[in-house]
Each structure stands twice: as structure tokens, then as C-alpha cells.
Image (tube, rainbow, N blue to C red):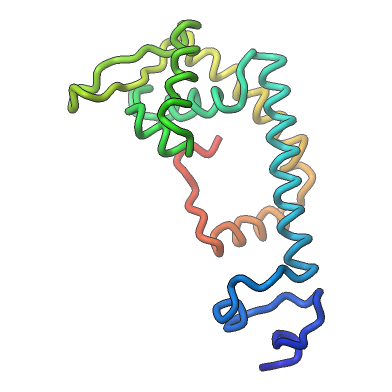
Length: 175
């Protein structure tokens, strides 16, 4: 074991290789802690900012935008309710509340699933597609201003490599 990754490694030195496998519950070192807290703080700040802008301009919170995005990019603007919930990592009851609101606003309709009479599909209406396009402009402007435009092309490429290294598979409806 080298001094840079062994038990006597300085706290700021990232640990590599077998140390992580042998002791997965060891405390975070300074570098790991800074990376983790930076990731969490950036994620939270970005979500709060995007949510506030979408809500103020389009009366659509981020969770609702994500449902509209999922439907806008689904074949025929239609997707199974359970599949939407699973892809967005929200409960079925949480999705039901969002879709109920979208239905009241005329942005989504609920239809019986043609392949399973027990299930329902959410279907984007023309009004929903228009609302999605307006909200998408707000979302992308905020995402660029608050995050993407602050990074160089090299930094963006490095982040892409990092997400791949940690096992992130880009969803089809990334934005």
C-alpha cells in the first residue's frame, strides 16, 4: 500500500482502489466531503432556482415539468402512469396528484391502457404540449445560466465522464 492511499494517507488525499472495497463505511476524508457537500448544495440550489422560476412564470413546479417532459418525449405523448412514476423516482400517489392537477388544467388526459385494462396512461394534450414548450424555455434558460454556462467545455466533458464512472445512464428525456 502506498502512503497516498494507505491508512496513513493525509486526509485530503483521495483513497483509491482496495481501501474503498475493504472499508466502505469509513468516514469521508476532506476531499470526499467537499465533493459530496458541493454536489448536494449545487443540486439543491439549482432545483430551488429552477422550481421558483418555473412556478413564477408558468405556474408549473419542477415535478410537474418533469411529467410534461416525460410525456412530450414519449411516443405519441403517451406513457403508463406506473412507468412515469418509476422513471421520475416518485410514488404512484405523488404522480396521481400531479396528473390530477394537469387534468384539471387541460394539459393531460388519462386513458385506459390499451394493453392492460387495469392500468392507465397519461396522454399529453395540445395545451399540455404548448405549456411544456413554454416551460422548457424557462427551464433551459435557468439551467444554462445557473449551471452549464459556468463550466468550460473541458469541465462539462469531465463531469460527463464522472457520471459515466459512477454508473449514471442518461435517460431518454434528459431535457
